[in-house]
Amino acid sequence: MAKYPRLYHISNQQHQLISSVGSQKGAGWEWNFSWRRSLFENEIGMAAEFLEELAQVTIHHNRPDLWVWKADPSGNYSTKSAYQLLVEATRGVSEDRTFVELWNLKIPFKAAVFAWRLIKDCLPTRTNLRTRQVELNDLRCPLCNSPEEDAAHLFFHCTKTLPLWWESQSWVNSSGVFPHNPKDHFWKHDNKPAARVRSKRWKCWWVALTWTIWKHRNEVVFDNQSFDGSKVINDALFLLWSWLKVMEKGFTMQFSYWSSHLKAAF
Image 1 (spheres, helix red, strand yellow):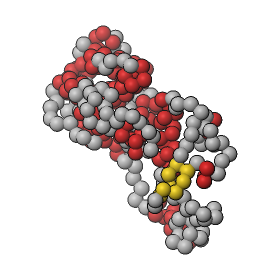
Image 2 (spheres, one colour):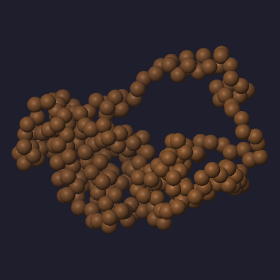
Image 3 (tube, helix red, strand yellow):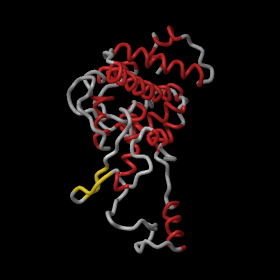
Image 4 (tube, helix red, strand yellow):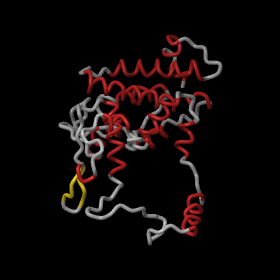
């Protein structure tokens, strides 16, 4: 209730015991949640995160509730096991270079969080929703109606979105096959020959284009809109320009000039 108040508010199963919201099925536990109405888009994401957390919990039917200290095989807390846990947690800690680079980009925080969720494969794509036990009638990509909609397909290899990356590659005279993994795809946008400022912009472009693709994808799914690749490119360019205008020191170019000189921009 405290962590997911919105889901709790629309639940038909408030104040009920675990046995009332699930049952033992074979060797595992199956949840059976009931809502007062259909979930909104942002609530689907919450439900997916909620189910992902529950998937890590083991339900032992007909056993009493009790606390277990997982750092010790006995399940009992000890000062020694706590100390060992802290030592192991601090030994060799190194933050993933990908996320260091991402957090250092001059973009709005919510854009960086979106990119982080994409790289971690936490966005509510149809494949992820199915994995998190959200019932869906159709798992196909809403843009091309072919394979299941996972992040790699939707953002990078769909017949509707792949040409957008081809076009942007031409701005920096780049070529080659795009990686399948979102993290590797992000690192492909490392324009090393360019000056540091333009190289950073190239990574910012990756965030702007993926975020715009996601926005247009949601308009297709929820508003019955059609997917227009040219509009996606233009919207992403304007989005990136608005970020640079506010967050990059000394950036004063007008959008019309900047967007018509993209090879110089990156």
